[in-house]
Amino acid sequence: MRYRFCAAKTLLSAAAALVLGMCTAGTAEEVLIDEVVAVVNGEIITRSQVEAQAQVLRPDLPLEPAFLKEALRLVIDETIIRQEAQRRELSVSEGAVQSAYVETRGGLTQSEFLWTLQERGLTPDEFRELLRQRLLREQLFGEQVSRVRHTEIVVSDEQARSFCESLRTYLRGEPAASVRLVQFSETYRQQLQQAERVHLAQIVVSDEGQAGEIRQQIAQGEDFGSLAEQHSLDPSARQGGDIGWFTPRQIDPGLRAEVLRLSPGETTGVIPISGGYYRILKVLDQRELSCDEWITRIVQFLEQQRIEAYLEQWVDGLRSQAQIFIADTEESQVSNE
Image 1 (cartoon, rainbow, N blue to C red):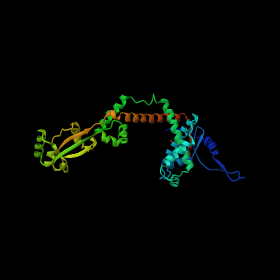
Image 2 (cartoon, helix red, strand yellow):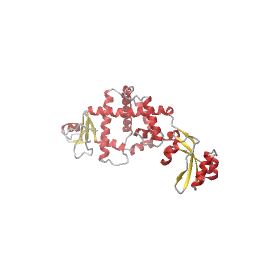
Image 3 (cartoon, helix red, strand yellow):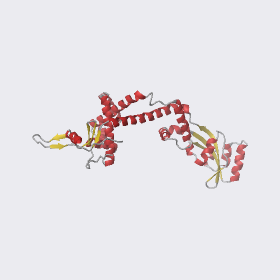
Image 4 (cartoon, rainbow, N blue to C red):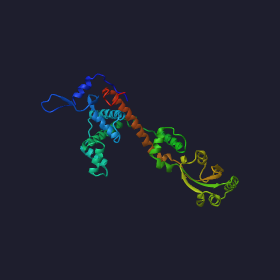
């Protein structure tokens, strides 16, 4: 994030004059009640604003320079966004602010909520103003996105299905082709565990020769479950060797490819395992990710990714056009780049 800096002190000195308070009546002495740390398109940003933002970001941590620097960047961006909303004559009603206030409070009593605000260094009025700015930002972003939705945000069916195929490959144990795949998988972790999985049974014995004989009996058509009950040393023998459902990534990488090649009803060969034991696995059932079932969620996810990327670039554009001056003093805890 780059800003234009003004080394001359005249601009900031003039801005500081706007936040000078007079002492008691009849006194000519001026007292600086807040420090100006930046000016954005002629609008002052004070240290107290930055510290308040830092307190929201890290309420339990001291106001260190790194936090203040990040807070300043956020305040500058919020100022630019608010100025753009004002230029477009957008506004937020008191009713909308009140609804957001009640929704945010949730099940807390008024006294409990006020205590929570106090812990974050906020008064109710300051919090309402934060809500107003958030709603205004959402309104502005929504209006801007609506202008480009059919040009910048469109996700084709081909793109969505290509993403789905990459997702299926990732779920089956291959490395992620993009960060988006990991993000999508984390977002829908529980649902995807049901969408791509395999149901397995096993027979475990301690003698390789015996394992080979059992494998031959299976090939000749004998029932896997009955053989498991008769010979398997694993506790699952009581359930005919059934060891349940697994996602591909839960299967040992050394076995994964072999297991995933099998169709329901097919078995592996004899597999040596640690401790001098031998295993035979059978695929009882399997579920594969259906792109038809997931296409809507994939399109929504990809559209949201594009919206976020577009808005980031759009705000960058607003920032590049803005006149931004940041105080460059040794005393300032907000360092510039």
